[in-house]
Every structure is written in C-alpha cells, then in structure tokens.
Length: 259
Image 1 (cartoon, one colour):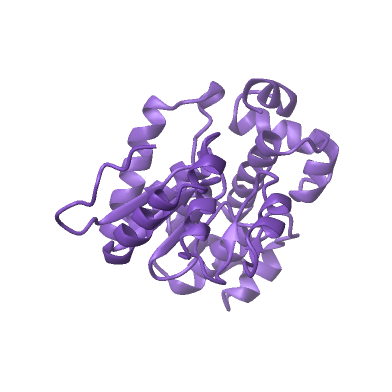
Image 2 (cartoon, one colour):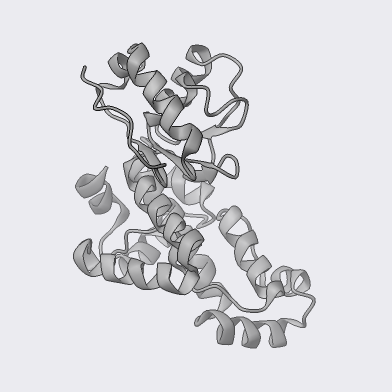
C-alpha cells in the first residue's frame, strides 16, 4: 500500500469509505497513522459502512456509538473492544466532529445531512430534489430518508411531531395523540400540520412508514408480513397498497429489484 503523503493545508472533511479492502487497510500502520494525523486537524470525519473500522482503529470513535444496519454489529462488537454500537440509526453524528453511516445508501443520506449542516435545510432539500431526478427509481421512488429531505415545519411543536413519527415509524400515531403532543385540538392540529408540512398527518405517517419499509426490504431478509407489522401497516396487504400508491410497485417487486 502506498501512502500519498500529508496535505499541506488542513483537510475540511475526511471521508473513510468501506469496502472489501478494509480488513487489509486497518492492518497497515502507515495508513492508520495517516488517518490519525489528517483527521486530527480536519473539521470533521465521515465514515461509510465498514469505513468505521478504520476510524475505530485510529481511535477516532472512542466510546461513542457507531451505527450499522447491515449486519455488521455482530462483527463490530468483538473486533473493536470498548466500543458501543448502536444498530438502529441509518446514520448518526457520533460527536461534534465524527459522523458515521450504516451502509452505501445511508451514505447518500449522510451526504445530504452534511449539506444541511453546512448550508441549511432549504439547500439540502434542493440538492435532494436534483438528485432524485437522476436517481429515480421505478414509480418515482425517492432515494432519501425522511429526516434529510422531507419538508420541516417552522413551528417547533409541529417539528417535534414530525421527529416523533420519524423516530418510531411503527407507532400508532393517532391524530388525537399527535395533536396532544403539539398541544392543539385535533382539528386545529390537522390544519396547522397540513399547512406547515404540505400534507395531512395521516399521509405523512404513511410516507414515513413506507420509507422505513423500503429500507428494511433492501437491507434485511425479513418477510413482508414481519416488515409490515414492524413499520405500523398492520397487514401485508395494507403495506402493499401503500407501496403501489407511493412507489409504483409492490413490496415483492421492490425487493427483487433493489435488495
């Protein structure tokens, strides 16, 4: 392995991608020393998928959580001692400086989150819309996780409701409960939410559930029935109807194409 050398000026963002060569790379002292040195002066460090192994080897993760949604948790825990692994998020900000993404598609979500962090939500949403034009999936399926590209309400109370829905796609999310969280009457809440977000609360819940199910179809071998129950659809038929309405194809067709 050849180490190119150290940049003359500090690097803004160090990106450590994953891949088949990660095991060999993390055994190269010169490379790990390079990662340590360059990351020490960088504004932030980003890992994608198994690139987290390089960051952990360089001591950049410490005891902060590293996320994984592709079955790597079972591998990560015994191989990196003293590291707590969070298996739930598709990406997360482990510290002020370090961001970690679970897999390749999660890396796209993370890239948009970095744009949002640097330039604001409006620009990140614009970039996401541009990307959708070129990364369109069958039936107009969009590529990105809801927290990155979905319209964010201006009112704090409505944003908190959005975050609650996104954090637990499989929750009941009844209008009365959501309205109570926003400290509004159900009727007033429905009107305000629709005005702020651009669609009714029930439609938003369906969108988030569909996105959660989409990811699980891609990244797990669980049955459609199990995914439908976990994501709050109740039945596989309800999930199928939502998929056809929002994605343009059935869950089984989606899995065959993208899993």
